[in-house]
Image (cartoon, rainbow, N blue to C red; front, side):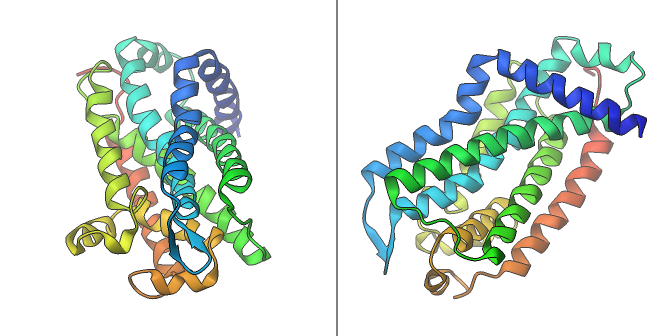
Length: 260
């Protein structure tokens, strides 16, 4: 209980510190919204009966926003905290590692919720995105949000061990995120990508999060436009659960308080 309580306090502090960094707030929360407005305004072609590319893109950006809020943010922020000596000072406090992880998870979930609300509101207001009409789709949406948040948090913490310094973290992390976005059908229709790209993307969770969000926000008939001619809901959830377990294990194993 003390670990959880400390984690909650740490999460509150993480949110306050994050809100004071205006550049991080704009890049993390508003950048996906800016991309949605640009791409949604330029590409308006109908890609399937009752579905425009702008609607397809909004669904993808909602999933991609999880990567921005969790994986990218933490994989860049933690090396910077390590260089600044923040983690070294935290190591000298009674706060356990689990509480630190809980604090980061709360920050990611909070920023992800704000970002998702903005994306959905913008999609509904400007691009004809339809809200889920059944409780099953709403429950699927909540599951994807929680699973995507936890997954991106764990993998972001794990990947933070790779950059050698905070200064070079963005150069290491950003290309990985951009490549995953292209491969996973965020910027392009997934079925139009080369077969080898589809196969590589199917290994990673972002492809299944984007497909899951399409299931939530696009008509059921669009399932026939997917590679397997179905939503493959169970498979997508399973892949994300596997990556979550792997991410937590790697985060615990590779996390460092100090620079080597």
